[in-house]
Amino acid sequence: MRRRISPEGRINIGNDARGEPLAGKVSISGSVHGILISPYQLGDEARPDCKVTVWESGQRLVLPLQFRQKAGLIAGDTVDVLFREDGGILLVKATNICALCGEQTEDMLEMPNGRLVCPRCRRILCADEP
Ligand SMILES: [Zn+2]
Image (tube, rainbow, N blue to C red; front, side, top):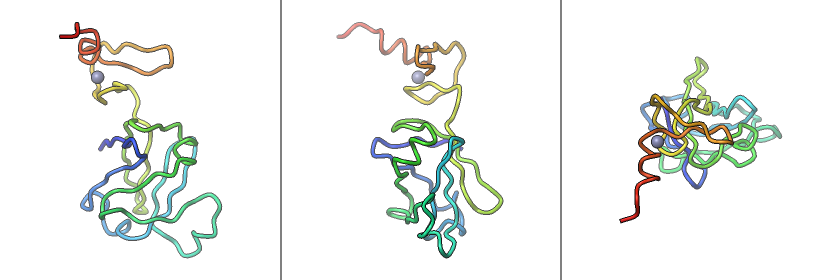
């Protein structure tokens, strides 16, 4: 499944998708591969490489800026949500999708910074102002 990182750096993953292991406290860590949300383990507070937190309103989680930067993720990016056998969730930057709408289509235009833009968004952007 895919999710978008909100402008405030949050991710929204429903209770049903997360399941029991991630219902309460979680530990977030980041690497160049992505952001890992793991079930909380005793002592995680003391680890410098992770942050212990809880879901807001049961569904939303703030992804700390330091881990987003490590994973090369910015607000508005779309991530693939991968469910691990240990109950954790790995957020990996989705590839080959439109940087504006998050869709994956044929005939994507690659921008100088490597981001892709789909034909539909190009048409919207290039349409004459009313
Ligand atoms: Zn698009």
